[in-house]
Amino acid sequence: MIQNNDPILADMIAREAKRQDTEIELIASENYVSKDVLEANGSILTNKYAEGYAWKRYYWGCHIIDEIETLAIDRAKQLFDAEHVNVQPLSGSPANMAVYLGVLEPGDKVLWFSLDQGGHLTHGHPMNFSGILYENIPYFLNKETEEMDMDELERIAMESQPKMIIAGFSAYSRDLDWKRFREIADKCGAILMADIAHIAGLIAAGVIENPVPYCDVVTTTTHKTLRGPRGWMIMCKKKYAKAIDRAVFPWMQWGPHENLIAAKAVAFGEALKPEFKEYQLQVMKNADTIATCLQEKGFKIVSGGTSNHLMLVDTFVSYGVTGKQAEHALEVVGLSANKNMVPYDTRPPMNPSGIRIGTPAATTRGMGTQEMKEIADIFSQAIQNHDNEAHLETQRQRVLELCAKFPIYK
Ligand code: DSN
Image 1 (tube, rainbow, N blue to C red):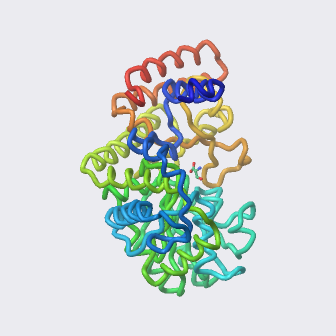
Image 2: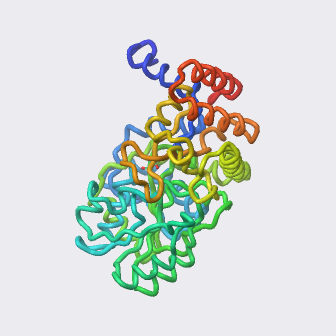
Image 3: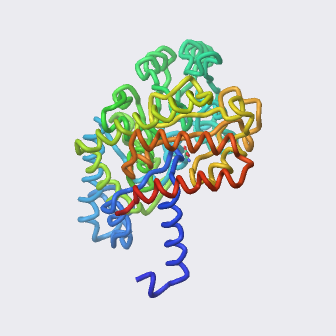
């Protein structure tokens, strides 16, 4: 239809589809949804206004929408063992903002994992509401191990007495000690919030520990390892349900996007199946394979490896190639990855020392450990020959051959 009625846009979508199909996606936060998720996302549900919550809407004609939203909530509760779920948040910053507005007062103290160490901007950075409206106190990694320093976190928490502690990241490759986070929060009387955007799929599949029982509130994207449509959800203990729901609607958002919520329900249904666990185990195995291969090729991996779906590679300390140079070389060969600061980076954020790599998307294509070894070799060749055009072109051909063997939508 678009092809006939809007060939200009159709051409753009076709070119993007080709780009996705002919590059290997290593951006740790990206993935490919199933055709069922795509179908629900593009469905007629987008036509309906449904302000409010299931069975308590503002508009008429929402009874089927109510069933759909309830299905998404029930599946999410089952996946994460959550007491209360809100599936309406559209994206991360508003979802996290709804939590802050719901459970804090402006000016309250929040303990967050510093952005330059792997934390996320929406937890306390001055560029975002979280850093503008609240007093933020960062915590850091242990400089030697490059892992979370829980004793230091406890010291900072006891000294600063925050109203809330946030556990969450966008560039950290190790497990978090949820029990210890809970103990520290209890000791200083803080609310404990986790942002599990990156690891939600691993948690849903049961391959890493579930923080939901330990936390007061948990937010997550639905589109990263969870492999659903672009969107968020909030889970919380029953005692916070009213405050969180009110903060999402009517404070933050009005008409929920019910096509997205239906697509979330589809993705949660997929995540409840046994094959989802197989997928997540392979995601982790693939990440570990790349990390091990890169270490063998002389690359420094932050914290010495990975326990999840991502890793940080210090290209600058390894081969004197900055994150920006590395990102560009990888783009030329068709490996899509992002430059990233490494812990205690001495380089600036726009040209840092490292590259972040993740395996969720490549694993969805069906790539396994053999392909990861090949990808690690292409990565290594690209970085070490980042200014050699002919060499990069040879690596580009290797990527194209791999992509042809693993089409995204068969
Ligand atoms: N853009 C996401 C990521 O790449 O981790 C976080 O916002």
